[in-house]
Length: 125
Image 1 (cartoon, rainbow, N blue to C red):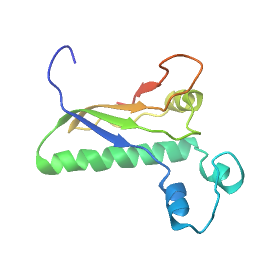
Image 2 (tube, helix red, strand yellow; image 1 turned 180 degrees about the vertical axis):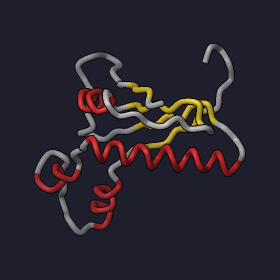
Image 3 (cartoon, helix red, strand yellow; image 1 turned 45 degrees about the vertical axis):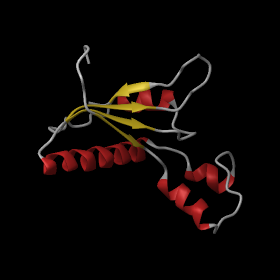
Image 4 (cartoon, rainbow, N blue to C red; image 1 turned 60 degrees about the vertical axis):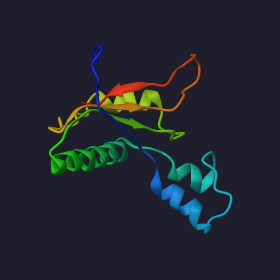
């Protein structure tokens, strides 16, 4: 931030239900590209908003409890079906609340292909 030293926390946005199901071994051979695995890994605007809001609130509360602040909360994801075009469309009418203990929140998607170095970055608040 303009040559200043900043505090950054990096956290991850993941589909925990899908990962827990794979880890349990209850459903062998799940794929994100077909069947139940594909269905479970689809993102909706509602799910996107709920998960990001939960992450932001949890991190904001942590810093408030400690009486500290962080300059940037970077939320990264490697979700295969969380696509740049969808996120861009959803963010056009979603407003995340400003957090008193976090200066800014950014979302970094996994590589989207088609352009070198294309890791889409979105400012959430």
